[in-house]
Length: 379
Image (tube, rainbow, N blue to C red; front, side, top):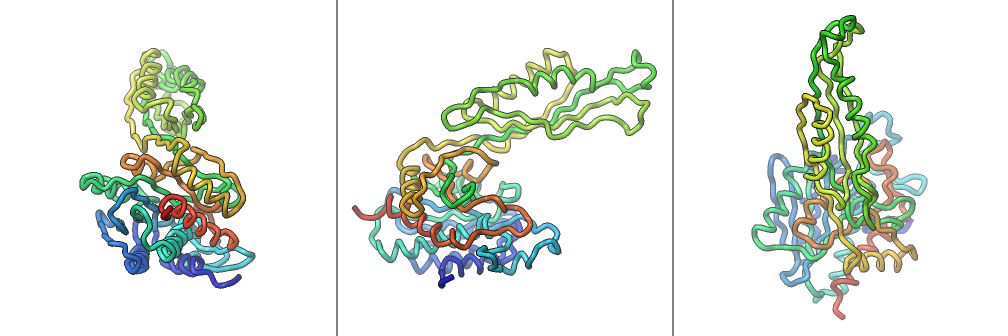
């Protein structure tokens, strides 16, 4: 393969073992490359998390590239074909932790900016980078914190492209124009413990909760909409009993999660769950955790610019999708009206031998550059 500036930078970033939330100098390296392009670079640190806000220009519209330098742990390193933090090229692929999620995207964004600024030094609007080391972790001191600070000082992006690995099979076949919300419940149903031979002297919480659980599992929460599948409720854990076979348990614990669309709200889902449990006259405690609200960018200026960039580079008509887990897009969407996630194939993310195909690396950079051209190049 011929020399690639993007490949070289991706390898440099992968070699830095930035397991969440430790940035390991990744953002410092990015700032070193962005500053000569005219970016004002600001580091925001909180609770061991490093965040970078870098901005070039002060005019509207403000276009933001967003992403994360942190990676998930490697898992058993002996199961990797090569050292996960020693980037290796073989069989037409670049291997290493973060190769797909998402250090190659970061490299591609920076090189795309280098090329765009060189060709259009007097471009319209402004360009910024919002980079965190707290996306793979609890996500409490990263992008959400930066967005709060930006909003407080009146810096509101108009467009944001996040480099998450969104493609399904080949580069550009799928981008995300939204994500579902995530709402978790920790339910404890109370009964009365007793001897299994004397059920009349006990109250079995498993038996008491079973009819309500069956209704919850079968409930149709909404019908979804043009962009979203119907809301899904899934039980992840059921725990009860003492381990003995002759004891009726005194409590039943159920963990469940909603992945919900914009057709439902967190409050409406909570109310419907409580109504079902109350209808069955259960004695229970239920604690809720809202992991993220859904966000949606309808078809418009940004999606058209990204899709046109993909089509021009690959010939593919990208599918807009809202599937998958949560992302930092849920925070950025609070201050930015148009957010699109666009990145490499995601089949190997978080896995042993994570990789990206070499043939996708420079086209990814070109997609990002073409997106900038579509939005900010002088007309």
